Length: 582
Image 1 (cartoon, rainbow, N blue to C red):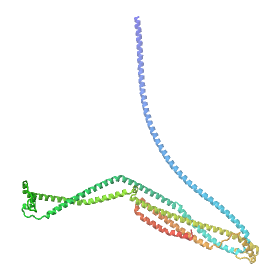
Image 2: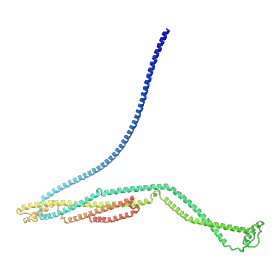
Image 3: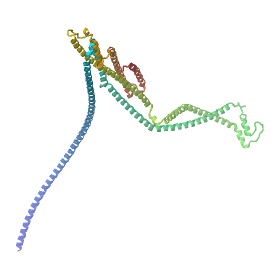
Image 4: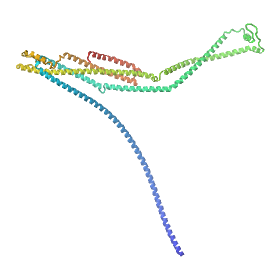
């Protein structure tokens, strides 16, 4: 049993060894698998890190590209917005121009409609008149037989008048061309309106320039007030201190002068003393000895006796007096030297004190004037005042020139109106002549028929200068018929020879007047351009031009010369108005 147990134990041990070997093999396999898995895991980690790096770089690159594209899109959007604004502005401008052109076309269409209505009314009136004329002609054919010679003469006269009217038409067409040319020059690109607009633009530029100068002057005044008021206060304080010091110096000078005068008096009294009686010092000091001893100089007796203690002083008195005299002389010489130096210093100081007082007085006057002026008036500095005066003068000159130009335009407009009236009168005269020509031609035809019916064998000449003798008996009846038919017929006008002559004269004078006015307007415009260029040069300060304050006098002289040159034009216009031309 023990062997069996051992055998079983051996088997179990062998089985256990086998299991252990299997377990070791499995463990080694597991270790190898774990190593492979760890290597694979590390490789996956490296791949993940590389993928993360690539993803980060791709993300960064994508963000940069998106940022650049967004910036480009923003720039493009701004450009598109600017282009859209420009296009919208251009569209608005074109729309405004189109609206203006549409308004002009509507106005022209309305004018044409009105003209069409007027033409229709005129045609209706002409038709009515033609009907009336036809009725009058049919009614008065038989009454106009005695008017054949007069009709022939009138035919010749009408031919002459037609030639004259053709000449008048040519002259009027020339005048109309000249008026159209003037209108084109006035309303063209370089016409009067364009020049006036250009002058207004220049005036706006000048006004803005002057406004900027006003702002500059106001800022300068405020800056001066801020910076210089404290300095003026300091100067005022210094002036007060200097005046106080000057008063003290003057008092000291007066005291020194009094002392010098007293010293001069003392020196003069010392010089006027009598010479000594003898060379003995005792005799020289006799008055002092008498004073010290109590002797009355007038009575000659001793009032009191000197005490014994004063006897040494009396003995040593001459030496002390000599020492005092020497010290006094030294002191006087020192004082005189000091006084001389003080006098020299005072003489050198006097001009400075006078100059200082004068500057103080000037500063006080300036401060008083500045305090007396209001705050608003301080802004207008002298250059500003000069500039304002010059600009006011120049503005008045420009306004006068503009008024003269408007007067010239009004005169030219009155001349054009007169020419239109004259042309209307000529057209009315032409219509009247054409009507009379038609009536006379019809009368001539009817008279030819009547004569051919009355005298068939006789040939009637074309001009109808004579009437057959057989119609003499019928003239009275025909005249009566003509008198009866006269109210129905068109009333003839008297011969227009004198009227045509005066009309020719007026046309000639109107042409000359138009030419003269045109030349004067051109001269005025040229003068105004030159004056405005000079104004711009003087105000804006171009190089090589005169300044504003100096160029005002020649400009006023030129304006006066221009006004004097334009006076004959005004006188001619007034004369023409008095004569009844306009």
